[in-house]
Amino acid sequence: MNILIVEDEQDIRELLKLHLIEEGYSVFQAEDGEQAIDVFKNNKIDLILLDIMLPKIDGFKVINKVREISEVPVIFLTAREDHKILGLALGGDDYIVKPFNTNEVIARVQALLRRTYKYANITKNEGINGKLRLDKESCTFYVHNKPIDLNAKEYKILEMFMDNVGKVHTKKQIYENVWGEPYYEDDNTIMVHISHIRDKIEENPKEPKYLKTIRGIGYKMEKMENEE
Image 1 (cartoon, rainbow, N blue to C red):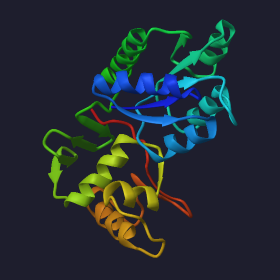
Image 2: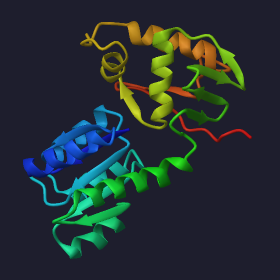
Image 3: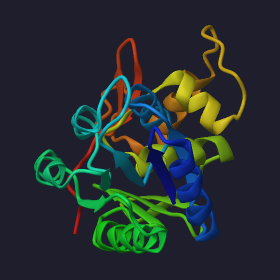
């Protein structure tokens, strides 16, 4: 899973990064609030370790921005006891008071990830959204429990959307995440692949219910009620 560390003190960032990597996590870093929001919007983040006293934009404003688009779990890092209540009220899930023991941080991260994703509809190996189901272990995508044929790029695009239901992705984000190459504005590759995917998952591809176009921005997977 991907952890975003938002902390303006480099020594603390590097210490947390080292211990998280040792536990098998992938780590993203940000040294101020503006950078944190940018990193979060452009990457799949599973948990945020968020300092409150940050340059440019403080941690309270960062979580406000994050909560506009995501319910990703957030652990506040704070040197002030009076900050923890406000942090939790704004949508934080846990807090750790500085100075802290890194072993405690790791334990809190592991516990919160277990609580968050154990009972979520989207788990590590399976994504469910309405009639759509993604089985990551077999790399198989189902519509109404029937497997559909996807090429590698179509599968990766759908996997990204199923991992981030409700989140808008720009064409640039989709292309660079899936193809791993720089995106050029006049490239219609994304549009063609989205069209092919809609033909396979939508009842009426011309009026899609799942894979929506956000004009002037990109695309998103609409959240639907899961079917029994």
